[in-house]
Length: 250
Ligand code: MF3
Ligand code: CO
Image 1 (cartoon, protein in one colour):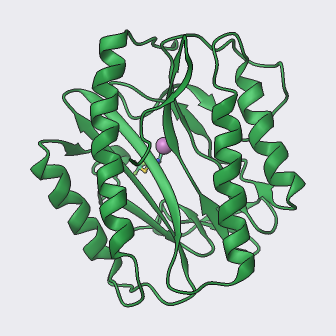
Image 2 (cartoon, protein in one colour; image 1 turned 90 degrees about the vertical axis):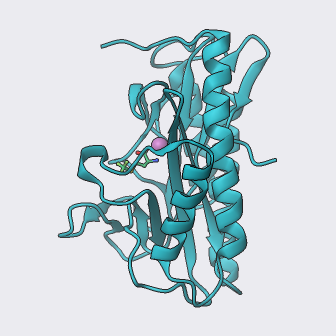
């Protein structure tokens, strides 16, 4: 296997796909409040996606049964929409992807439900900042480890831990392409980053220890120690002008 480099017109296709993802996440963000059923968020995501002529990228992926991942509190990633309702004080990660005209987009945000604790706010803030610190390193000539190390430093300097068992990924015609992008590593190590790569960088950050386990549903990933977890993700193209965040909300 190898890393598939994208031409400028392919990056524009990926941008169109990621724009739909960003639109969906921004509409879902308006809906997130106490009392909302997580399955209704999944439904809304599907409706918008269909209206835009795109296909949900997660549904059916390795048998995943929904379009959206909804990961509440100690759920790290891959929480499944259900009849569960959001409650005041929860933090909720919404992770969404589409396939539009043959290119995939993928992004995630973590949001507060109503009023949340200072601790929860700080966890989300640090996680999002670690994503941006990783993105800043997504430049041609840098190494993959520069991204990983930047994310890890921000997280660990804040006293949190980076999940080891799940990583970011290349993205393009397929949701998951090479390379894998760990959120931990060493500066100067790993493959050289090149123009035309599109990387889905997605720190998963636990307030406690980094260990996770998967529930018996085969999907839901939770922190082993029950601590809160946050998750942010952007799809980022490496261009001659530096990182281009294809999934940014605007
Ligand atoms: N953003 C996640 C990822 O890139 C979502 C995948 S969920 C799955 O891995 F259901 F599609 F597997
Ligand atoms: Co992803």
